[in-house]
Image (cartoon, rainbow over all chains, first blue to last red):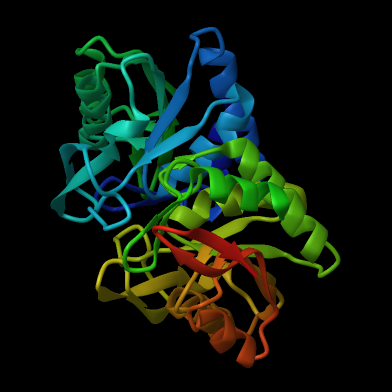
Length: 190
Length: 190
């Protein structure tokens, strides 16, 4: 998606340690008009898959999923990272390792909102080592729902997540795949 | 907002301990078409305030803010609950007490994205004891930005947050204000 790649080149900041900061338009401050174009692109890619629900995980995925869901006319379900008293009763849980935060955490959805008859599209902002995405895929499997695929905004193609998840037979469509990046020489897309 | 009140009565669940579960349409599973109507209502209320930025806090506020922002044509900024290596450098920080989670945490925004020239509309899903909203108001003050008001989806009118924040001179507009609620007798709106 050229608009997105242009934006990443213009406003993204490559930091040491394979960190790409896109917090000026994607995951802290959010350019909602860009999300709108991203949502349309996901609709173009997955529009014929009979999606009944979009699944994401808090926090950065939520805005992207909600704007995209408008084009699919389906509800969003976001996995929570902490058990709270506002989610009670039966839940599906998967463990996710966060490299950004340097710890593991559980992601949780109510069984009530993920059913075998659902056709689920997963949407998330980043795919790097794949832990969060594998967790979301696991939640869909736990529910016995059909996974139609995963729509990712930015994939770090030089990390193993994309290959790991695709090796499980999941259709992963990333709008921008970074082949390599370097604080001095910048970003190369695949 | 009658559509919202009707939905709360139909799908909200009142639990012991002043808990209102709206996780089937607002803060776990999200009915994006309802968010769209909520966004239009915030635009009707705050449309003439010259809003340049919508501020919310992760996680449940993000979807509401992003859908509403489409009607204002402004970016969303969401305060993060944890310092991560993806937000570095200068930040504004406020401490928030969470009654849901039974602990305190910091909310953080980059100084880069909140400026004295901004006219900020705060949007959040719930207003109860007011701690999160006071934290967000504090971030706006720290930045020297102009706060045009706070748009809240559901206010628990029987708790002190609304009065606390309004006493500070903040314009708080809640789309549904709950006067009282009870697991047996249900919800009464103000």
